[in-house]
Image 1 (cartoon, rainbow, N blue to C red):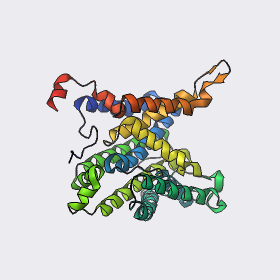
Image 2 (cartoon, rainbow, N blue to C red):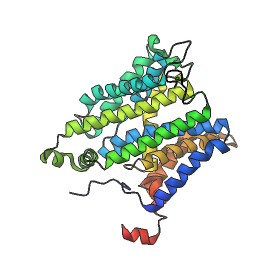
Image 3 (cartoon, rainbow, N blue to C red):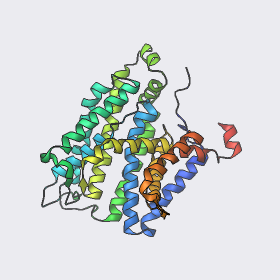
Image 4 (cartoon, rainbow, N blue to C red):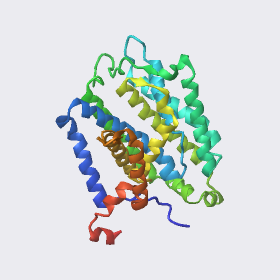
Length: 337
């Protein structure tokens, strides 16, 4: 039986240095960037949380889901329904409530889908997500195709004391950064726990894990539920930041984007999901801003360019962008592994 490890589960020193420098840049960014770019990077960090939640399924457990955006959207809609039209609602109970709603939906859907494997798992997750999408898209009571506005950001006050104000763009940025780091540290700790090692074993050989006495159904259902709850955390933050939710945020394309982020950065180590989310969003903006050459508007065909870029990464860097950083490591470090 091969070692139940994904690529770069143990981060080389060169990757750790690159990630530390990236964290330093994120901490300093609001002091140098404009409000527009501060909001843009905030959205990137939200997508990084979303991508990490999918990586728990895809990179660690080996379950490729094409319906993960459903849990992202459900938490955002939960915030929209809980927020009154004329006042802010408390952050301290709406956040756990929205995350719990996504986790509960993932638990119910996961009870059915984790019984399947391979291509059947992919198709069933997509089918459930499309059912959720059309439930909101075709129902005016749930906002319909126009979606719902969230007129007020959640209120963080505690008995009159206000520790921070989410209306401030810089505060929203640092709250999102703190939550992204907490999710990363939590998932890295989970990865090396007995639960995480069991999930890695299921990815390598589920039949052998079952023969060894592991109840693989329970492990996979737990991972599916936890991943759904973390996707809900990202969806809640998205609702806070943008003030708007629509059914497209829980559709197939949103799930596919998260899938590409995880592949782009490198699967199974969570840092790759963060790098992939940032790289995907940067590429998205770069390709959309391409100029018109002759009679061809290059920016209009941004999906083509980003698709070609993903193909190149998968072909020449199967460990993702984080794997490219690993290639820069000193020879001494490489020999010591």
